[in-house]
Image (cartoon, rainbow, N blue to C red):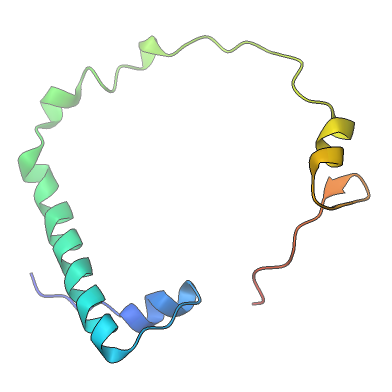
Length: 92
């Protein structure tokens, strides 16, 4: 199935840039991945997945003390007003 994959747009979302040769290679790789993903429903029989999807095999939740906020903030590179402070990575 031929589809148009906008590698330049995907790259801009990830703040990456590729030249035309790299873009062509990535476009072929994406097409291969999407073609394979499209074949998965044919390759996998949903009836064979029933044991994987059994929800009654989940473990019980147990409440534990966890780590104190003071210890956590001391281990953080930077904190502000009781919260871990991280650099801004998204501008828009």
